[in-house]
Amino acid sequence: MTFNKILPALALLTLPIMAQAEKYPAPVEAMRERGVEVLERFDAPSGLTGYTALFNGRPLALYVTEDGKHALIGSLLNAKGEDLTGVVLEEKVSRPQSKVMWEKLKDSSWIADGSDKAETIVYVFTDPNCPYCKRFWPTVQSVVDRYGDSIAVTMRDYPLPFHGQAAVREAAAAQCVFKLAGNKAFWTYSDMIYAKTASNGQGITGKQPLVQMATEMGVDPAQFTNCVNDNAAVRQGIEQDTASAGRAGIRGTPTSVLIDTKTGKTALVRGAQPMTVISSALDVLLDKTK
Image (cartoon, rainbow, N blue to C red):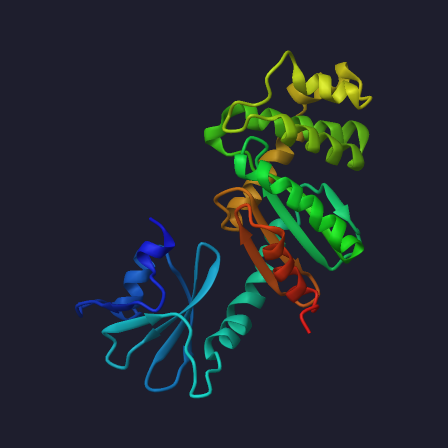
């Protein structure tokens, strides 16, 4: 069930009053049953009661009417048109959740480009056999080129189950190139994978194409083959990345998590978005919008 189906923006939810022992009003309880994580109650004007919440990692606010029978979902504006909700969500949800997300992500395996001293980090969860990741890969490279040492871009493996072993083997192959030839070689090899893979579980055609590509880069074929087939650390790294994605509420690829480790601000970009979308989010974190 999609977010738009169960949480239409500013939808007025009308539910019958039911005798219940829960501490939440009936409309809020109904949202909890639909997967919304209610976090905290806060004061709101005009007799409303506010609740901060998360749905699929997205912060939102619920406003319950004074009689407790209805709830509004969305932003509350004052007479001047100022957004009263954004301030609340930033203070009570975004900043605390960024710390939580940082803890969930920082222990996953690191393959990075950019500066290792950057305070703004872009975590990109990808699946080598995902057609949308294939489309998004040039954007990842553009981010590194445009922002340079202002950020660090770190890749996370998230091979989706329905893409089968092709996705897992391609992820492992790139990890093995990183292990055997270093960070720069990883990015070059990943370029080759995304250029040649047929996506959707089909992988790359040809006789041992992953070995051939690694050999062309000067990687020893025997060591590479042994690494891909029987390296527990590589497999563990992929599993660790996948687990990190699950803990952070990520369900699809590509997904980019942007975190300013100094201010605690975060941004979540889902899908193969164009460079303009990524830049807009990064400029806010880097305070370049003034």
